[in-house]
Image 1: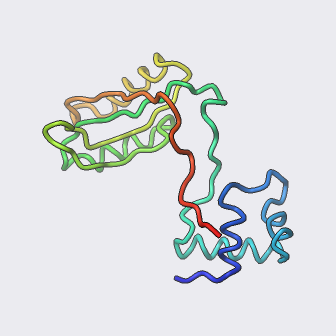
Image 2: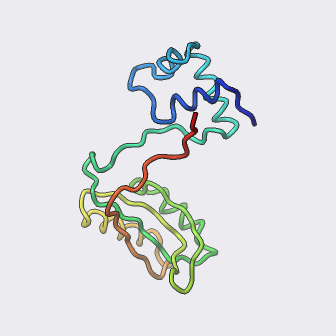
Length: 159
């Protein structure tokens, strides 16, 4: 699973985002002096071998009006946590969901799910719906509201 110089150049050219044009990969290719089809084929290969995990839009939810952002944390029995995570992670209003180890006795929560809303009331309504989905699999939860954005980027290669 090695990358060559052109793979690295493509990653560096796209890691901050794709150009907002009808043919973004061709625009990247033009800056690199190669054909658009080569950029597309290389990115596809990098996805297949796991160098790139995914390509997707990263909207600024604050600009979209979603200013109430709550990380819900749930205390779910360990033997039910994976299924519970799949159930609430599949809800259309949950942006990401994952399991983490407990840090007893201070931190009893092992299931985390992020919810965005235009108000705290909207978030609380979504949390109630999540609690209904989880049913008796959880004995307690909390909502930790964001107060500022700390980081909105992934790993970056440096030249």
